[in-house]
Amino acid sequence: MNHSKSLFYMSIILIAIFSLIACGSDDSDGTTPTAPPVDQFQGTIEWVKTFGGTNEDNALSVVEATDGGYVLAGYTQSIDGDITDKTATDSDYWVLKLSANGEIVWTKTYGGSGDDRAEKIIKTNDGGYAIVGYSRSADEDVTLNEGLQDYWIVKIDASGDIQWQKSFGFSGIDRAFSLVQTQDDGYFITGFLDVTASGGEGNDNRSKSSVKHGVGEFWGIKLDASGEKEWRRFFGGTNNDRSYDTLQTEDGGFIMIGSSESVDFDITNSKGSYDFWAVKVNSEGTKLWQKSFGGSEIDVAYAIATTGNGKFVIVGDSRSADGDITGDRGNADLWMIQIDGNGNMIWQKSLGGTAFDTGRGIHKTQNGGFIITGNSRSNDLDVSENKGQSDIWNIMIDNNGDVMWKSTVGGSEAEFGEGCIETSDQKIVVVGNSESTDFDVPNNKGSKDVIIIKYKIEK
Image 1 (cartoon, rainbow, N blue to C red):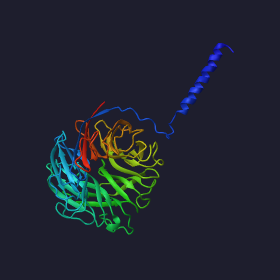
Image 2 (cartoon, rainbow, N blue to C red):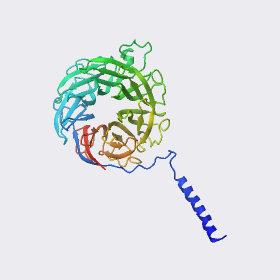
Image 3 (cartoon, helix red, strand yellow):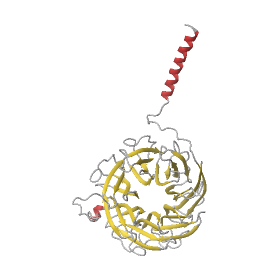
Image 4 (cartoon, rainbow, N blue to C red):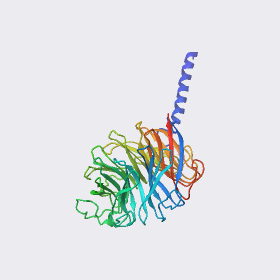
């Protein structure tokens, strides 16, 4: 064999060896999570502030005020510290107005002698705010209660003074979690109804169902601009179905998202134990479609945002490793999906480490992506750091679900992220609760405090 042929055969052998090595290291079958991508953005914490008293305090939602400050909503059980208008340790709605630098401008509580907890705040077209949650009270600020817990919506002006408040519910546990101001300046509220306790009531302008659904239904209520009820509709099956977020679509209808444990009545394509469940209704509350997403284990959707082009991104967490879920990391992952206007899934992504990770809030950014907040107990794979029991985990994604930036914030105790926004000057603000007094957390007033984090994001 001459020298040129020897070199030729040796080249073939080397190519075969390198091909085998490359194939052996290929994890594209999804059984092993790939290495996290390098962040395209850098985030710097401008400041972290905590607020509260000696008891439990929590922020679940935040909006940017017209003057560039921030308005937070949640609940407080404290009667001291930063809480100045409360004398009993039951839970009350707590609204906190901060300056752009995180200093208190005003703080107000709303409620009665029972437990009242705010879940969502929105800025309204008249410069004020609307807050929704649930109430056990029937006194003080709350003029009506039909049962154990009712939806309670409170409309306040820019100074935090109550303009009106309304309760909706029956004899059982009925909880509101989200609201939007509608195209006609009214409101749409979503949460869940204990339809067994209501005896089948809760679907206005329809005959009462001869067959009662189950222990919890998605329950949407449309109000006019003064808070007067226009219509109510519930959707679900015989088990637990709970709506945690909603938005109005361009055609005037609404999408409600949350979780469903049911396999009957309105649910026709259950995937497993609990699924992400989305329900689309028209402007009069008539169901147009419903879709389930998930695997055989527990999957819960907590927040939805629009892409602006007829598509939507839904975030929550998943314990599944089958069905619609691929690339699972372990335990529970932050799971997000994009759907089109007919509820068809476009893409899905799992993010996290080998411990518990979840997404709780999402907000569209000015660059067409999204900021997501939640919490993580992991310290591996997609999560580069963990400072304690649970950290606030913040992620920025593009419109394809690819991670552009991520960050964990916390101390040696437990922190949880609940709500997030991008501000008009393209800063990121995240709110939740904290039990720490070290690492990223400057202080603790007692038990669980409200925490707010402001980031500067740069390429």
